[in-house]
Length: 360
Image 1 (cartoon, rainbow, N blue to C red):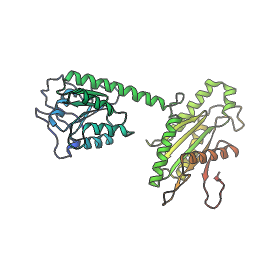
Image 2 (image 1 turned 90 degrees about the horizontal axis):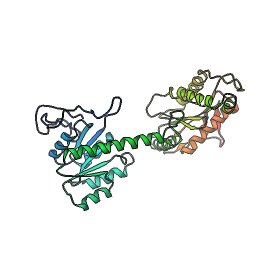
Image 3 (image 1 turned 180 degrees about the horizontal axis):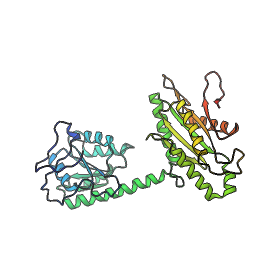
Image 4 (image 1 turned 90 degrees about the vertical axis):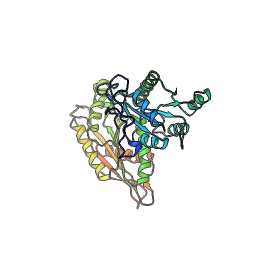
């Protein structure tokens, strides 16, 4: 929903679609410097998304004039519709009126802050009530800033820019905290979080969830022979090779720790995961990284363990928890190592016997 520059009009919208999805059409004679959508974003940077929430279309129009050029503008005339838009595409900054019919701005902000997907989005209140009590109440529910009506363009632009900068910095810090510094893959923390989410989703939906546990064979000997810088380069090469095997956005490749990697594959059956495990083995061997002290061969190899949740109609899953799925993949990986390394083994749960069996 982009801001456009049509002929002079009031608040022109497309009435053929629901009002909470309409684009804002701005008069050309706004009195503001001409800018293009996303002019504040650098080359290659994502354009910030701003969500304006007010039951008064005139206020929406005024704010849209002021913020034209700072990012992608969307608007909602009620808090409920604004929440729908925010869930559809998470904004970078929200400007909301404190007093609205139905759900007011305070309840809207509190609802956002209670939602893990929206909690980090800064909310700026724009209110005609300039009392200190009102301002304090806004900050009490999690507001990032407060602007009094009638809003001054310089104040609105400066404060929105400040929140966009802070949001960009916090997003960068959060991303950094979830990335492995050596390989650039997701780190153990990111994997653990995503594993819990995907296990819950698999349990609800009954869809399969697969996990590959990958370990570089004889890596200690490699470090002792070639040195730690070469060992780091080896891990980076392995990371690139296995990351290149997945293309779906939901798939996650992470460094689990040391020389171990994992691949989390939602909606993937055991047959598909087993095939991918074989591809991982071949992709790493194809790197032809010399390892002349490895008992398994002249080049670096990996051992892979594959496990897949098997969900039944009654809502039960085997393995039934994140820890159980990791344990199953881990045991399959150790079977691969015990039977020669440089191969992939798949865990096969059996209802007839209590112990584990493997497809080697």
